[in-house]
Length: 116
Image (cartoon, rainbow, N blue to C red):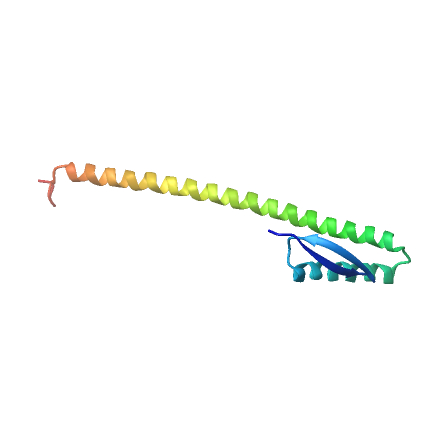
């Protein structure tokens, strides 16, 4: 994908960013960061740099938790797929066994209703 250059405004400052993502996506990210920074600055007597560190930690925490959750889901899906493959294999085995028993039963001489 081709990188494009965007101008993003965060906390009153403009930043020129090159990214492969769409402008709408980048503006959405900038807006979320701007909102988080303004909330931290409004509720605490911190410098812009300190507020940026708090927001960076919060976003890193969210990203780490999302990654861990995705890894956990991938492991669960892998387990489910392995269980499904095992169940299919067992089903196939019992299907073959049933066919074998049917053929074996058909080869036995019929004794009739009264065992003649």
